[in-house]
View (tube, helix red, strand yellow):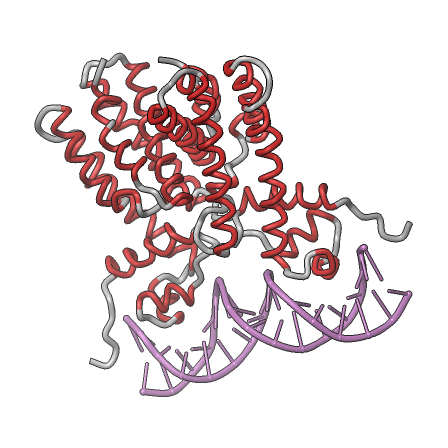
Length: 186
Length: 186
DNA sequence: GTCTATATTAAGATAGAC
DNA sequence: GTCTATCTTAATATAGAC
């Protein structure tokens, strides 16, 4: 065929890698075109709204990813500890053992649209809720569970910042391992 | 006078506010000119290297700030607890109680120069060292002190990410308050 | 549905008047 | 030492061929 193309899933996955690395302002349509093998005009055909629309489509992908890999497993079968173990593995994968930045951090920097900020806030809140619920199931009181969830996400985000600045992923791996104790004990 | 101007300190202080908010790629010379009351050409007169040079001058300001407000007080007079208390106050001020983002996080995003990444890494390492030393003085072993320092900075960074995404500064204030227990106890 | 080509705007950067 | 004016490049975005 004349114009071998890529699926929307593939396109958005490559776009996500760019956006989580360089941020909203740091990614140009030329970069997106180069990284996906499409021309800029083709991007506008797929996403008439341009960069904003691509960004929001990426956010939908991120939300679906969290739903499938974090929220759903936490509500699934088995003991809270077992379920959290599965989520730990998914988080390790998504963040590449700490080598890849957090979308919520990098894209949460001012300069993006209000719609983007809303989407990020919404995912972050859902994540907090999901962690609080597993902690609640693990035997903690409502208010303690809520605090532990906040603490867990806060530490993961901080570990990813340290990893990015120092190029050291050890704190992230330590933080992931500490999740069961933080969310399920005492 | 015809052209009322601002001092270098004032200029860099305003530039810092822009850079920590919008990131390196997110700040344009036009923005810098508008925010400081100077024309773009005047910025090139002061900083012939353009945005890169301005950014690095801002980094020098940040380093001086950490030296004066964090590193020096930690090595100053009084008990470790007293010294840490002073630093807690300075951190609260610099991060505006959690309302302002961390320079190391926002500017650590890919897209800046290698020189910038080096400067950020260097400040982060000095901060780790300073926190580890106060923890050591507080009675902790070398390796524990080092871990606690890492944990402290990681939590502060994570709290600032949460604050930025959720618009909630409570986790940051809680994290600051927890510093003495984290760095000086057990 | 993708391409080439181009319009339009804003960015970084410089020349030269004052 | 700051200004106005301009250059050059790269960004977003569109028109129209295939």
